[in-house]
Image (cartoon, rainbow, N blue to C red; front, side):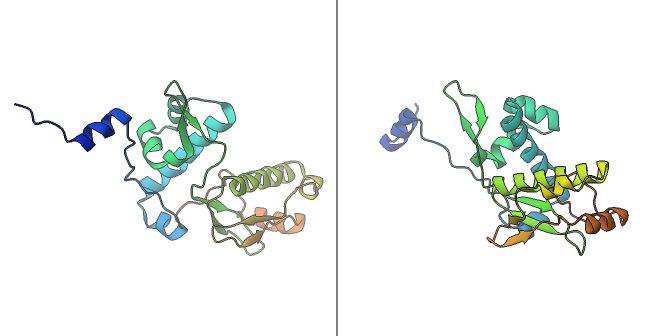
Length: 187
C-alpha cells in the first residue's frame, strides 16, 4: 500500500510550488576564476546565449545550440535572467545581474573589470565596437562620439574607458587590443 502524502506536501503539489535552485553562480571575479576552465567557458557561452535571446529573439534551444551549450546549463546557472511565458517557453528578461568579467584595457594594458549589471556590460561591448571601428578605419570621431566615458564595476567604482587614439594605437601595436571577445579569460 502507498503511504498517503502529508497535507502540506499535497498542497504544494496542487499549488505548483516552485523548486528552489541549488545552482549559485559566481558573484565575484575571484569566485569565477576559482572555477574550472570548462565551467568558465560554459558560463561565458551561456551569457552569449542569453544575449542572443535578447537581441535576436531566439528561443532558448536555438540560442544554446548556436553557442554550443546545453539548455540545461543555461536554465540551471542563468535562471535569474530567464522567465517563462504563458506557453511555457523561456524568454530572456530585459536586464540581469549576472557576473561578467569584462576585458577593458587601460593605458597600462589589459584590465579585467567584474560587473554584475547587464547595462554596464553593454557599455563595454559598445566601447569595443568603437575601438574596432577606430582601429579598422582610423577615424577618431567614433571615439569622440562615444556617449559614456566610464563603466561601473561590481563594487560600484567607476572605471574610465580609454578613448585616447594615440594610446589605443600603442596598445594595438603591442598586441594588447584583441577585441575577439570583451570577456576576460583565465590565463
